[in-house]
Length: 180
Image 1 (cartoon, rainbow, N blue to C red):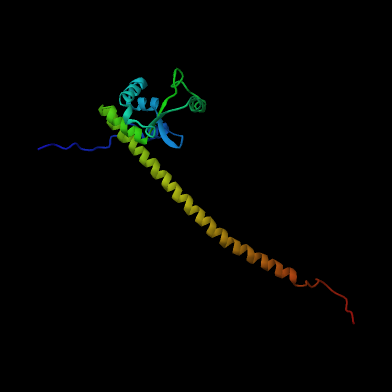
Image 2: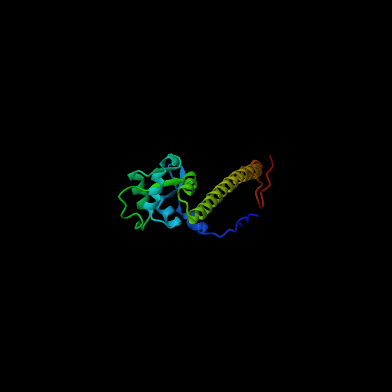
């Protein structure tokens, strides 16, 4: 009789630290090589070496290297660039699929657990974006609905105001009697 492993959610890494590592570059949500190495608790060069030994598993939509310009822009956005200070080359960016592929390249138990947490984070971000989009659509519908309703109220007020202007106002007070 084989004993099944119990799946206990022991968050190896807090969701927030993974979410903070996710950046948006070239239309993709990515995590940089140095951030992944930090999460996997390996040196960046070890991670890159493992990837290069298995480069056929990482097409451009799984992993790409930042251009020098992208790297400079990224570096300038972060006040503390000590983690990138001594780099001789721009970092590699891993998309969600690239991160998933890393689990087949990095075979440690830590890598498996980290990948599970990263995948969960990507899913939660997608859910948040989706609910945010749904909320935005609902808000636009409400704005339109209430704009139309308030438009009718304001139109009714304008009509009431113009109806008062059309009536001749009788003077207040005593008017001398005149006979024509």
